Length: 107
Image 1: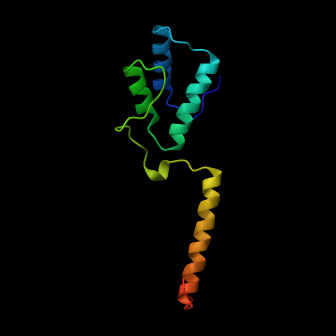
Image 2: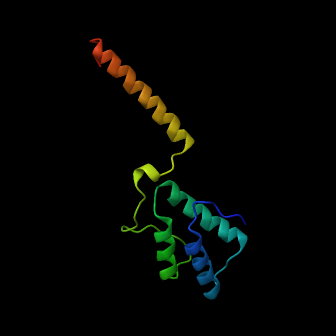
Image 3: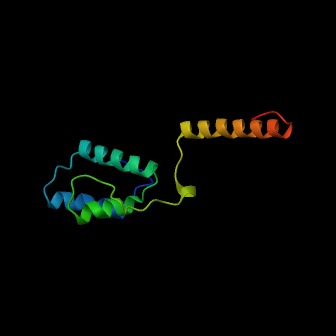
């Protein structure tokens, strides 16, 4: 299975080793489900290494976000294609309203 480039490999490998030692199921289907969980956290800007380390240290079967899980700085967070489209539409709307306000139209 090819792992995504955003995945912290050292933490992932340690976690998968822990799962094997604890005799947890580690089929390809389980790995895909775990990667989907991490992908969601990645898209939300969470620090995946911290999430995986928490799971490894707690011998958890899944990944969870707790209140102290750090997020990456805003500029490093990925943005979906749909979010980019919405942002572009809002930027255009704000630009038009600013131009209308300069001309004296009510906003």
